[in-house]
Image (cartoon, rainbow, N blue to C red; front, top):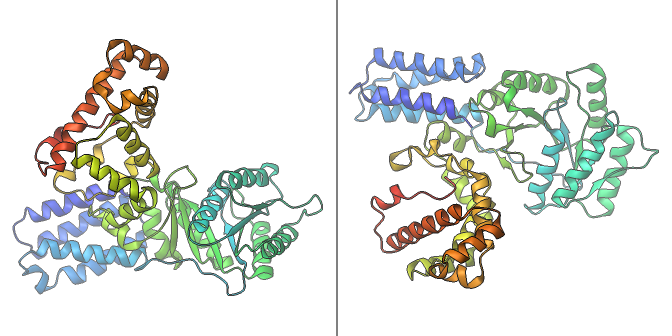
Length: 446
């Protein structure tokens, strides 16, 4: 996310550094370029105007223009203003003192409400809560079945209702009672949507709000629709007083205009972003981290949090020992790939790295997920002895491994060659000799 805007802003600041020293003239030129970059990223014009005015007032001051590193000061100012636009601090979910906490999930049809409901339920269950879901969309026959399928995937309960419960209010009322009786502390209500905002939809949502006094009314919007998502959020907020926004498909939105506009236009925070199709691809939104990513500074805190969640610590310690003692086997190689896959899409993880120094070209790295699957299949087709000692894998064994994994002998040969290179790099790393060798090394799936 934000790739296009990030690239443009980094070029602007690079050109600014090339000026040698800042002046009112080249600062004005840079601000014009920043304005264009933001507008091209589909950021709301009111947001652009406010941000540029704030940056100009601070950046054109004598203390900045005369500073030893004025460009760094300007970057710092832009970073601070981006954080303000995005919301200053992370906005966390609120919960009722009298559970279950009811949360309404609202939005237009096709925005990803049902999937986001499942993702949010999964996130809640992994953060010390016990959620239950219910769909009150009585108009689309497949809507409630879709939520039931999603609930099964995340392994969490969903209230399906009875044949007599044909009104949204009845379904929600019974679901809240069921949640309370079964010790569930959060009830996520997946509401009906429309292709456009209409009076009937709003009346129904207002009735749900009045009856259940939800602690959160979360508007789900598709980031790919840009300012249309912002306009819809504004309309929903006027009628319902939404408490926050979940932006879906952020992984496919290289511009980021909706994310940068929605807080300023609605006055309500962006609470979560969907970064993929899988049900674990939902992240709390951190304004400061997003601002850092936009300016190419990376998001190492999110990277570390994901790694800590996915990687087994005991296994990591044991792997470190094996690397030091040069005992890195094919089985270890396979296990490392499996650990990496737990982190989610690798391109998404690489996008969190700062775009400086030797890491500046990471944005161009493409990860072949199918190749990762193929590598694991080849290693799985080996015997334990072969995985422990690759040197015994002769031509006959290679043919058998290729047949067992549905690959070719050439692909088996290529994997063994890459594994050999990996061992050399790991040995060098363990001896503190990174140097140029790391730059030459390529994983088989990149």
